[in-house]
Image (cartoon, rainbow, N blue to C red; front, side, top):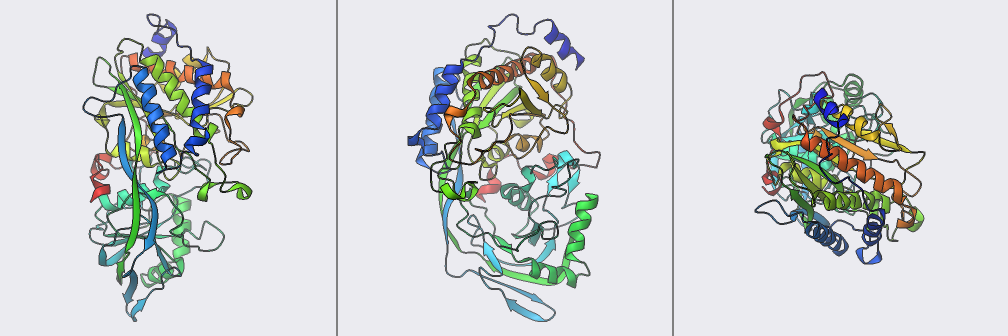
Length: 516
């Protein structure tokens, strides 16, 4: 990939218009996205749909069309309300007989849980993760078809800076949608989620139905269960629940096993309200079938709900100027530039993702149901919170996720007044690029850092740094163009030396797993 740096050094884009993002237009986009009629762009809201329509209109004005045969809107379901209906019950049977469990105290269905009646044996599957890119698989060697799987919340080594699971930032594998999809792909009949109490202090609380919105219908029962019950089951199989959690966290080696002699009966009759939300997808074709993805999430928190960090103002509109109207506006700026250029070697797919704030729903849906063959995606560039730069510091994560990426980023960045953070200090998780990493797609993440207004009503457009935000958009556009014209594509680099599993074996490439 040294050829990439050589091409850049002689002026890869010399035959094209120089990229210059209009900071005034970018700020106008942010002001609209954070305006009162959009109401904080919560998932499933009318305000989010207005934002989607705005993004689609900018794409159209820029000459960026939908993927052939598609519209701008890639729709998927989210659950926006739920009630527990009659017939919901759970019991378990062991050597001492059958014991009924108490709804709300012992177990709690999730809002996206299906109403299927399940009678099944149980299998403990650690964190319920199959992560090819990290060489980690809780399901290795297990047959969970028709079984209820018990899995821990979160992910291994979440407090370890050097962990392959992106250190102290959660990856996509900690998200409920990914855990549910992975369980269904392996053939599980139900999911029981238990708090990882050995690594988290505090009460063993069950998440209530009011914690919404959430993924669309799971198709299988999905419930939280009290850790003391799971501890009893695991002890009957000769294991210590706390020790298992500690050992997985210490050694990053899965500990999964069937629990003999234990069976459950579960029905979660959840009456839910679902609405469709949409990723907004535009496409600039190249001269080949390969393409890059440039994206940012455009949803935010509405009036705060469960994700607000401002207890005194929960219920007030959270405008989300930096998180992530800034990244969305940058995607629009990049669309305006690419829409005016002649075709490059590779195309560019521009995406405004929905549902990021409630579990990376949009990017996960995109990678499971791609509008173009996912194998033709050569890289993904994600912008999340790029509007509040301090001391010229710009985090660019993922420069080692694909061969040649570091040289491209550093060569382009020489023309910009930024101090790049690309080492261990580069936070690199819990945003939409992680869905692409899970499919072996090299990914870059652009981020200017957290601040006191994060997830608060005070994240307003007047605090956005127009010049630096425009320069970041300009730089991302130039990196994208460089990768689009490069003679070869980056080769994905797995972030672990462990033995991985092939994503084609365990990750469905359509959205049917969500609809069954």
